Image (cartoon, rainbow, N blue to C red; front, top):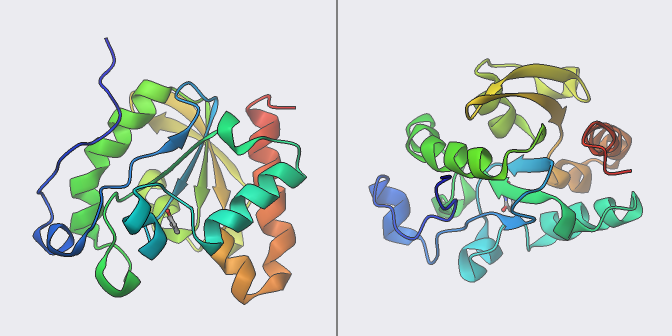
Length: 184
Ligand code: URA
């Protein structure tokens, strides 16, 4: 029996609890073979309780559709489920507090491929401090949430907003993950 991956209540991070509107659980297919893991919710995600619904989410959904994949066919979630104040990066302790929620979700969804979106989820799931732009598109096989899974190192969609030269690398990592997950 696999636990329900949605978190209804959590009070582990007092600073985040004090300023969050909603806990942001994952969206998409509850048995997807591909999970996309971002960093933490922003303002629109905090208001709606749905991950990647702001500008980054639009970019992500558009990229998936351009590559022929309905966003509802994949799982989209974050390392941290509550919005950090002023959109600061989630702290290591907050990532650790939320890691159990992410593992429960990944165990329930059981994807064979996980694409990390940017530095925070990459370092969290790899457990090492790497420079994402130097390793984007690489595939690592490692234990995640109780099973060996293929981790594809990807860029955060917002990175392509600020620097359009990053768009090809963002799309290549996404394409690799989609292929490995057998979505074509
Ligand atoms: N950025 C993220 O990393 N996650 C979201 O849900 C939205 C923006």
